[in-house]
Image 1 (cartoon, one colour):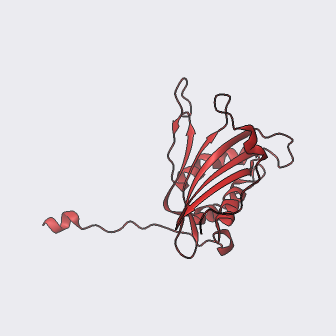
Image 2 (tube, rainbow, N blue to C red):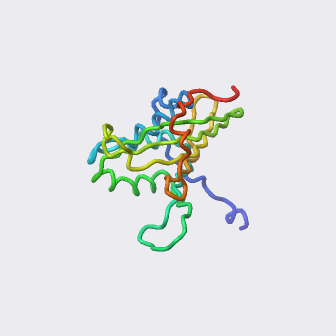
Image 3 (tube, rainbow, N blue to C red):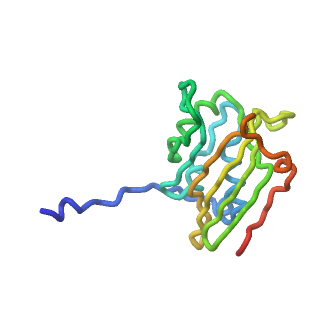
Length: 179
Protein backbone atom coordinates (compact mmCIF):
# COMPACT_ATOMS: atom_id res chain seq x y z
CA UNK A 1 0.00 0.00 0.00
CA UNK A 2 2.74 2.52 0.88
CA UNK A 3 4.79 1.53 -2.14
CA UNK A 4 2.04 2.87 -4.37
CA UNK A 5 2.35 6.30 -2.79
CA UNK A 6 6.05 6.53 -3.60
CA UNK A 7 5.99 4.74 -6.93
CA UNK A 8 6.07 7.16 -9.79
CA UNK A 9 7.31 7.20 -13.30
CA UNK A 10 9.97 9.63 -14.39
CA UNK A 11 8.40 12.35 -16.53
CA UNK A 12 9.22 12.06 -20.20
CA UNK A 13 11.59 14.87 -21.12
CA UNK A 14 11.87 15.50 -24.82
CA UNK A 15 15.29 16.50 -26.08
CA UNK A 16 16.17 17.61 -29.56
CA UNK A 17 19.24 16.48 -31.43
CA UNK A 18 21.64 19.39 -31.73
CA UNK A 19 23.86 20.16 -34.67
CA UNK A 20 27.24 19.13 -33.23
CA UNK A 21 28.80 22.36 -34.52
CA UNK A 22 26.29 24.38 -32.44
CA UNK A 23 27.30 22.75 -29.15
CA UNK A 24 30.99 21.92 -29.61
CA UNK A 25 32.31 24.95 -27.71
CA UNK A 26 31.18 27.83 -25.56
CA UNK A 27 31.60 30.19 -28.49
CA UNK A 28 29.54 27.94 -30.76
CA UNK A 29 26.58 27.60 -28.40
CA UNK A 30 26.49 31.34 -27.61
CA UNK A 31 26.65 32.17 -31.33
CA UNK A 32 23.85 29.68 -32.07
CA UNK A 33 21.68 31.12 -29.29
CA UNK A 34 21.88 34.59 -30.86
CA UNK A 35 21.43 33.30 -34.42
CA UNK A 36 18.30 31.27 -33.72
CA UNK A 37 16.29 34.20 -32.35
CA UNK A 38 17.42 36.68 -35.03
CA UNK A 39 15.53 37.25 -38.26
CA UNK A 40 13.19 39.50 -40.22
CA UNK A 41 9.53 40.03 -39.33
CA UNK A 42 7.41 37.00 -40.13
CA UNK A 43 10.35 34.61 -40.52
CA UNK A 44 9.63 31.39 -38.65
CA UNK A 45 12.48 30.77 -36.23
CA UNK A 46 14.03 27.30 -36.00
CA UNK A 47 12.57 26.36 -32.64
CA UNK A 48 13.94 22.81 -32.89
CA UNK A 49 17.42 24.33 -33.03
CA UNK A 50 16.56 26.58 -30.08
CA UNK A 51 15.36 23.65 -27.98
CA UNK A 52 18.46 21.60 -28.88
CA UNK A 53 20.74 24.16 -27.19
CA UNK A 54 19.06 23.87 -23.77
CA UNK A 55 19.38 21.11 -21.20
CA UNK A 56 16.00 19.62 -20.17
CA UNK A 57 14.58 21.82 -17.40
CA UNK A 58 16.52 24.91 -18.53
CA UNK A 59 15.19 28.37 -17.74
CA UNK A 60 15.09 31.71 -19.54
CA UNK A 61 14.61 34.56 -17.09
CA UNK A 62 14.06 38.12 -18.26
CA UNK A 63 13.93 40.85 -15.64
CA UNK A 64 10.74 42.67 -16.55
CA UNK A 65 7.51 44.18 -15.38
CA UNK A 66 4.47 41.93 -15.62
CA UNK A 67 2.67 42.59 -18.88
CA UNK A 68 -0.30 44.91 -18.54
CA UNK A 69 0.52 46.05 -15.02
CA UNK A 70 1.41 49.63 -14.16
CA UNK A 71 3.60 50.87 -11.32
CA UNK A 72 5.12 47.50 -10.50
CA UNK A 73 8.72 46.76 -9.73
CA UNK A 74 10.92 44.77 -12.04
CA UNK A 75 10.96 41.08 -11.21
CA UNK A 76 12.32 37.86 -12.72
CA UNK A 77 9.87 36.23 -15.13
CA UNK A 78 10.91 32.55 -14.98
CA UNK A 79 10.17 30.68 -18.22
CA UNK A 80 10.96 27.26 -19.58
CA UNK A 81 12.02 27.06 -23.24
CA UNK A 82 8.50 26.49 -24.57
CA UNK A 83 7.05 29.36 -22.51
CA UNK A 84 9.80 31.63 -23.88
CA UNK A 85 8.95 30.58 -27.44
CA UNK A 86 5.24 31.22 -26.83
CA UNK A 87 6.11 34.65 -25.41
CA UNK A 88 8.32 35.85 -28.30
CA UNK A 89 6.81 34.15 -31.34
CA UNK A 90 3.93 36.66 -31.79
CA UNK A 91 6.43 39.54 -31.54
CA UNK A 92 8.72 37.95 -34.14
CA UNK A 93 5.76 37.54 -36.52
CA UNK A 94 5.24 41.31 -36.54
CA UNK A 95 8.76 42.67 -35.95
CA UNK A 96 12.23 42.12 -37.24
CA UNK A 97 14.60 41.22 -34.44
CA UNK A 98 18.36 40.90 -34.77
CA UNK A 99 20.37 40.49 -31.60
CA UNK A 100 24.16 40.73 -31.72
CA UNK A 101 26.71 40.14 -29.01
CA UNK A 102 29.03 43.12 -28.53
CA UNK A 103 31.08 42.02 -25.52
CA UNK A 104 31.67 38.86 -23.53
CA UNK A 105 33.33 37.77 -20.32
CA UNK A 106 33.60 34.03 -19.71
CA UNK A 107 34.61 32.18 -16.59
CA UNK A 108 34.92 28.40 -16.52
CA UNK A 109 35.52 25.90 -13.76
CA UNK A 110 35.58 22.24 -14.77
CA UNK A 111 32.33 21.42 -16.52
CA UNK A 112 30.51 24.67 -15.72
CA UNK A 113 30.87 28.07 -17.32
CA UNK A 114 29.36 31.49 -16.73
CA UNK A 115 29.16 33.93 -19.62
CA UNK A 116 28.35 37.63 -19.28
CA UNK A 117 27.20 38.54 -22.79
CA UNK A 118 26.38 42.16 -23.65
CA UNK A 119 24.03 42.52 -26.61
CA UNK A 120 22.43 45.03 -28.94
CA UNK A 121 19.05 44.46 -30.61
CA UNK A 122 17.96 45.95 -33.94
CA UNK A 123 14.82 45.65 -36.07
CA UNK A 124 17.03 45.24 -39.16
CA UNK A 125 20.67 44.18 -39.16
CA UNK A 126 21.72 47.37 -40.96
CA UNK A 127 19.95 49.81 -38.58
CA UNK A 128 22.37 52.52 -37.46
CA UNK A 129 21.36 52.35 -33.81
CA UNK A 130 20.01 49.53 -31.66
CA UNK A 131 16.54 49.90 -30.17
CA UNK A 132 17.65 47.97 -27.10
CA UNK A 133 20.79 46.81 -25.32
CA UNK A 134 21.31 44.63 -22.30
CA UNK A 135 23.30 41.92 -20.58
CA UNK A 136 22.72 38.17 -20.60
CA UNK A 137 23.99 36.07 -17.71
CA UNK A 138 24.34 32.61 -19.24
CA UNK A 139 25.13 29.45 -17.30
CA UNK A 140 26.45 26.48 -19.26
CA UNK A 141 27.21 22.82 -18.56
CA UNK A 142 29.63 20.54 -20.43
CA UNK A 143 28.65 16.86 -20.25
CA UNK A 144 31.88 15.54 -21.75
CA UNK A 145 30.62 15.60 -25.32
CA UNK A 146 28.70 18.86 -25.74
CA UNK A 147 27.76 22.16 -24.10
CA UNK A 148 24.24 22.84 -22.78
CA UNK A 149 22.57 26.12 -21.83
CA UNK A 150 21.21 25.76 -18.30
CA UNK A 151 19.97 29.32 -17.75
CA UNK A 152 19.84 32.62 -19.59
CA UNK A 153 19.04 35.44 -17.16
CA UNK A 154 18.93 38.95 -18.65
CA UNK A 155 18.13 42.57 -18.12
CA UNK A 156 17.71 45.35 -20.65
CA UNK A 157 19.60 48.58 -20.33
CA UNK A 158 17.61 51.53 -18.97
CA UNK A 159 18.29 55.10 -17.91
CA UNK A 160 18.38 53.81 -14.32
CA UNK A 161 20.71 50.97 -15.29
CA UNK A 162 23.01 51.97 -18.18
CA UNK A 163 25.66 49.70 -19.63
CA UNK A 164 29.14 51.00 -18.86
CA UNK A 165 30.63 52.83 -21.83
CA UNK A 166 33.76 50.68 -21.89
CA UNK A 167 31.67 47.49 -22.22
CA UNK A 168 30.59 48.32 -25.77
CA UNK A 169 34.21 48.91 -26.78
CA UNK A 170 35.45 45.56 -25.45
CA UNK A 171 36.17 42.79 -27.88
CA UNK A 172 34.03 39.72 -27.64
CA UNK A 173 36.15 37.30 -25.66
CA UNK A 174 36.35 34.01 -27.51
CA UNK A 175 38.12 31.98 -24.87
CA UNK A 176 37.68 30.69 -21.41
CA UNK A 177 39.45 31.03 -18.10
CA UNK A 178 40.75 27.65 -17.09
CA UNK A 179 40.55 24.58 -19.23
